Image (cartoon, rainbow, N blue to C red; front, side, top):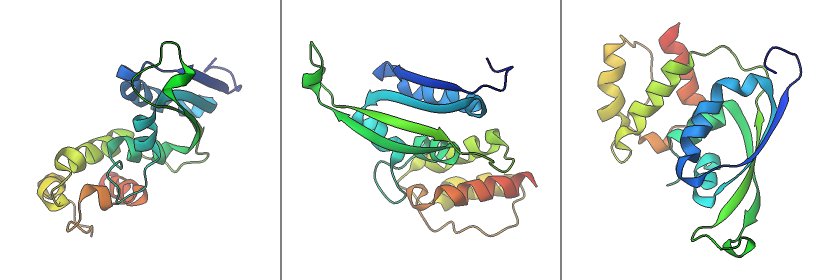
Length: 163
């Protein structure tokens, strides 16, 4: 269907043990998607929609929030299943953001992965050398933890590194 102008709607109950890799795998196909609705483990949904400066904010948050507007739409308790799982579930709605400015997704992904590689340290310890190796001459506040940097700043930095 990717060859037609028709966008697809994706709905699924993703296997909880591999949901994060599936979500990352779907990122490149967002331009062909009208919307996505997934039932996931509640803690994964919490990480997806987490705002900066919270414990749940991480690589998954940044990469998905850059590409999608997301909403935690429904809590699903274990009692809704037979047999009940040992975890809470939630349904998330994901709408691809229209008209994103061009971005080298590989650079953003590597940047975010490096930034969160030691999430409790200041980014000067993780990103400092990484940015030096790329001859970065711009300004970026390295006196923060990775979880304190908003999505827009990661995106701006990735764009600056490519230009």
